[in-house]
Amino acid sequence: MPTRPHQSSPEQSLRWEERRREVGARIRELRLGQNLSQEALALESGLSRNMIIGIEWGRKSVAYERLWDIAAVLDVPVDQLLVSAQSETRPEPYRGGRRPMGG
Image 1 (tube, rainbow, N blue to C red):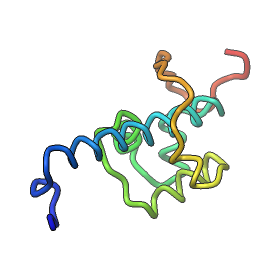
Image 2 (cartoon, rainbow, N blue to C red; image 1 turned 45 degrees about the vertical axis):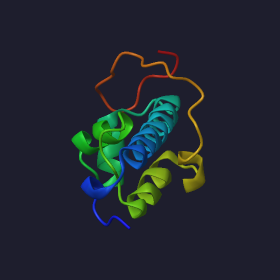
Image 3 (cartoon, rainbow, N blue to C red; image 1 turned 90 degrees about the vertical axis):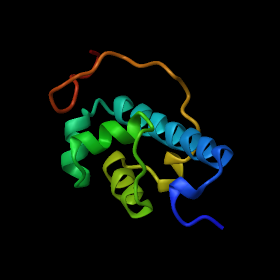
Image 4 (cartoon, rainbow, N blue to C red; image 1 turned 120 degrees about the vertical axis):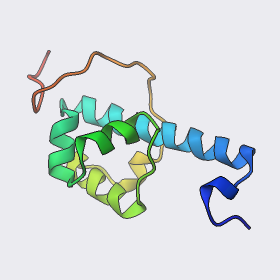
């Protein structure tokens, strides 16, 4: 049984990559639905903005304890981070705290 990512089979690595993308897309969807910037989510959850970016794009893994921190900021049960995102759209980035409603 592999103990490190580089010891995993290519198939397992692909499954993990897909799961990271799915969770990241869902976090992004929930964040945007609340008009919350990546920076604001990072500050409120105790993660760096670069980490939030990496998670949302499926490039970085996150400790499962941190999922609870993210869920708390998004005010959703942690299991809501593990369901598939409803859309794959990538709107233009917004840099500046919470977005004004309607914009």
